[in-house]
Amino acid sequence: MLHAEIPPLATRGPLGAVVGGLLQRDPQARLAAAVGGGAAYAVLAPRAAPATTLTYGSGGDVPQLETSSIHPCSLVAPAAGKTIESNSGVDCTDPHEAEWFATVPLYSTSDVLTYPGEQQLRAVGASMCRFYFDSPLVVAPDRSRLEVVALVPGEAVFGRDTSTSAGYHSFSGRNLHCALRTADGSQLEGSRVAQQPG
Image 1 (cartoon, rainbow, N blue to C red):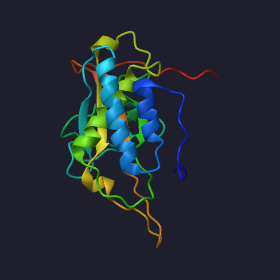
Image 2 (tube, rainbow, N blue to C red):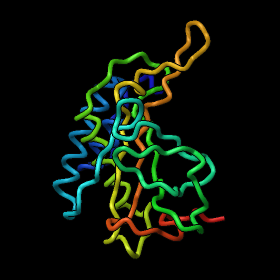
Image 3 (cartoon, one colour):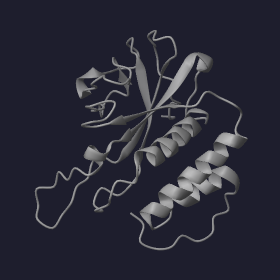
């Protein structure tokens, strides 16, 4: 969590808008700048299919979302009406339907905030997941047959405080999750996320 104003960044253009926006102290300023920067990125970037956006949590498109902390690939591709539990995670060497390639905290887990709005979250989620997918983070010779899915918190999970200690808050459902899946629903084998040396 940032507590001071951020000095001007050397980064310019759409990426600078996104990065600068995410570094702002005020949460609403961060989201607004990210939406604006993401929109500019979408206009200036090579034309590509937009990311599919889904909300997660109670009352959302994906009513339950639990990603594995060990296995980044999933037997279940995110889609409306599907439940994704942590035990659906598998090693990417096994056949799978989807791979999680980015998880981005949208807000602090300790700040008491009102829900910023589903459409705003969908917009920033789609832009950011598409940005990461088009970056060197994803290495996929079969990129043209893949789809990007952005999962953003629904209102219920965004505001759910799981803290059991008086005076403390823990809002854990505020992450953006980015996944890739095939457009035709066929299974994948192997990871498409760039491997770190060593």
